[in-house]
Length: 108
Image (cartoon, rainbow, N blue to C red; front, side, top):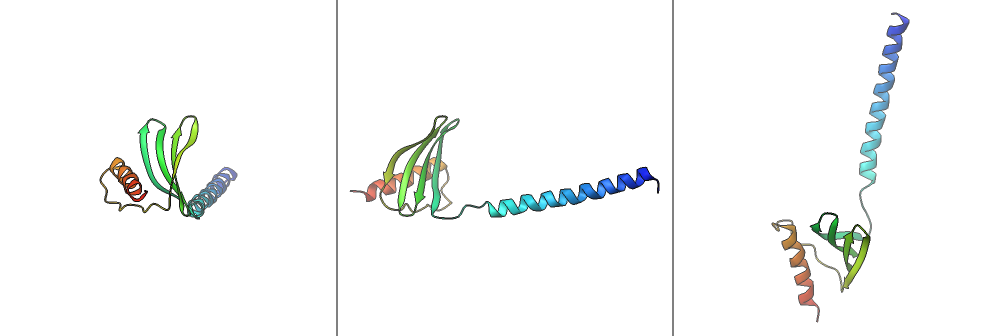
């Protein structure tokens, strides 16, 4: 084998090893990057481009947050935890309004 052929084979082997290493790194980061802990996104309602309303739960407290280009703004706090609805709700708007309705009915 000529020196050029040997160089090409060595380069391909090195690139293959680097590609496999990169793939393993990406898969490991996805697995390790999963959220854990007491913070949970209960519901999200997109309003317009780059604007949305979120229900975020941390422990027994639930916040209603507004998001826009300017950042996040706390719109209020709901008492107690909010129970997530079943995934069979047809539309995100229906799910979000049902969650808020259930919470408002339970508050005095």
